[in-house]
Image 1: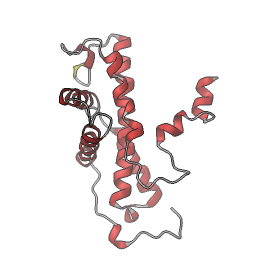
Image 2: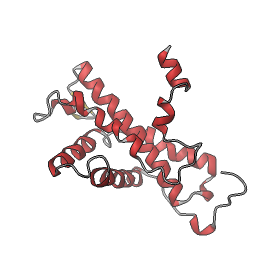
Image 3: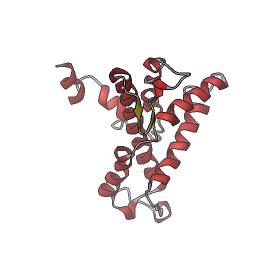
Length: 176
């Protein structure tokens, strides 16, 4: 944020960052995804299954990766300069990280033949699921580009686009 863009006093907010407040953002994002996003016009049973995949695999961990995004925002802006909008965006980005982690964990459980994850049977060990997660594992990752990056600026792209664009250090390193 530049010095020419002061934050108005009205935009400032009192916010206590906790697991519960972070989970509130998760609920907003998953509801938006199921109702308006990728599945908005799909049958109800498909929407329910998609939400079940997310609810079973994503929010059950420590959430340290995702919650750390807020901490970085505080370190950059200072807690006195936070707005509801940038807190929501930071938490949304945090959930993108958590969705990506869930994608990796579901795939890892299948590859390793794991029995449990986070104190419950792995997703693919659910009786109605079986090896469907070979396809299901992509669903949490598929949500990432659809997150609410409102007021886009040409130099700001969704995080997944930044990671997967040709010529970025990530793709250059992985391709070598």
